[in-house]
Image (tube, rainbow, N blue to C red):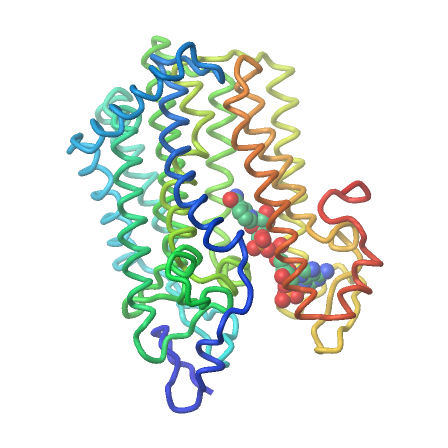
Length: 440
Ligand code: NDP
């Protein structure tokens, strides 16, 4: 059994069938789906900015689609020449890499790979977050909020830079995946170049001990999302003459809390589908580096130029709804993570499958097959509600998330069906709801 940690499985005892099994069926609609997502993700990342900003307002039906399209084309071209924006983005990315390299962190093992090996990871994402927040707070305190609007002011260039970063990384990992001895993702070796580049060929691409997938998944995009929010709040603070609205405060609290939570529980990521099953290709790169920071921060960016005062009752109701969602999300994930680590603190019921692996049948995982997604949905809605009802565009994230998690649940169901066979049918008969307990 190999325990090497550089992503290259040991050549001596693993056959091609183990390292690079041929993928027999496409996910995500195959090459057509890959082409669709590859073009629409960059399009929407820009479009959400150009349709919804200080000058354009935030209307779903622009007065002149032709003029909007022209402005968007010009805006994208202009963003390519905003060198300051590009410098800010790549300085940020370099800073996060530097933090990974120099900040202290425990070395933890991931789950077993197909080869039996376990990769080692340096877990200092939370320390990186503390350093980033600390520097930002120091900057705002010393230089004033006006000096922290540079993210808000260079938005399109930051999007362009992050898209380039995603492309560069996707090409790099695709070509690196052809080196001998690489462990490929079971879904990423179809032989179709576009699809494999998109979905990710290699399971855990690494440069030395630097794990490209987990690094991008947690640090540069998630932390940047919070910093973009801070920048939007600074813009609102300046334009309102020295205050931020209750709605902006809610969005900041919710988003920051989500990011802090994800990074604080860094090692929980090792058991997630993205890490255990999916390769790293353009889909994950652009999701982590562009989509998460620039699309998820839309509510804060909207409130920066269209402030909303909610009042106490609405603020309290939205606050309660978010933390109800969080409670479900966190307790469901904790029940499963503890159980997978061999602990059953709540004495939950379970069934033992033929493979020897156990499945929870009570607690949250007895109410639906993905209760954690249910909690995530409640949070997603709570993040949009503070923007009020003047535009549906700020509900884009919630709508997208509903589609994403419905699709993800089906993918996971299929994967579990393959893994557990008839036992999965038994589990489904005990727990018929997919996501929303007793409803869906
Ligand atoms: P999950 O954490 O939901 O894990 C699914 C796996 O859990 C299954 O493959 C199976 O794996 C195991 N499992 C399923 N049923 C049971 C059971 N009854 N008992 C024990 N184990 C079971 O996967 P995700 O990676 O999709 O989600 C992780 C978190 O990330 C979620 O909270 C989700 O909402 C969130 N998320 C957030 C996104 C965002 O953009 N904000 C995007 C996607 C996810 P096995 O049996 O092999 O252990």
